[in-house]
Length: 384
Image 1: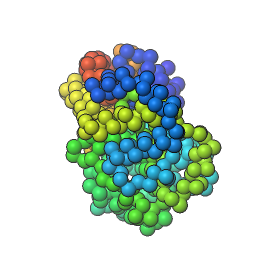
Image 2: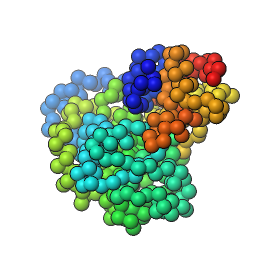
Image 3: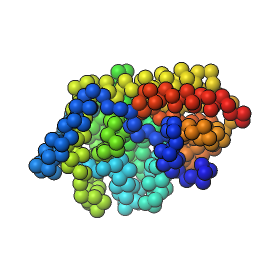
Image 4: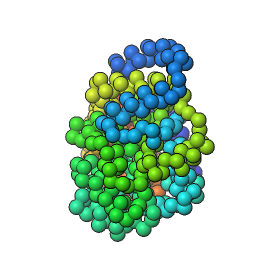
């Protein structure tokens, strides 16, 4: 069955049917104590949303979201809300297609990004993530690698956990300087940025201040979907430079009217809870599960690749070059363990991904421990 699947989402759909689902990065962990209290308040949140103006709920959600993330200079009047990050990506892709803007997209990345772009007639060309690894050479590498009108990055990246924040402000500054000097539109997917915020080594600086003061043309995509255990009740945010706003807004309104007022009211409380607990409910589960995965797989065929940011996925290299990810992943599925092969993340050259597997970490720690123990058993049983 797995060889017939066309993308990672189709793999994730299959994984939902298995006992040990370590495929999708959606949040399946249980509620923290603070979050349980919010769930207990659901009737009041429902009726509160019913009695509120949509615009007021939108404004409140934007305010608490950007306050949590420390993005204090963002102009929320250029931020548009949708009910999924893929919808925001679709709107961005439609803008690129409408304006006939060619785009370079980071590789590896989650394959729905190139797929959404292709489905609206935009055909991305790859720019390797390692072009961003040396802060002193970012400008030079981008000048050599990027031949298109736009640069599309993911930060922190999924699956690798790499972030320009490893260079402090300088990484983003160099990317923005390159885009300004070479008149490139900068598209940035920040859907995993909450994990940088939760990682004590990093946090986030006010990226929108940098973007808006630099004069760069930009589209920034943010999301709640990978952060809190909300059973896929979520909201994505698309913020753009003011010069793009009218055109992007006109596309956005052709796609949807609004996000559920109840969901906005519900989400705002989760964001406020994370402000109060300093992102502990997000950080602690991911940290525990990463450690459990490393412990369970230590000395096995799989080698953990340390991420820059402690994101909610773990990227493993297959030590034996003779073992392919597609074969190993199919073997693991027979043990009811579902992980994702690296092939799809290398969307322009899948063969390069045959050395990698991705394991999702956003699970209840008890269930996760049982899953990685089963994963180790299945990996050890693989005869190649």
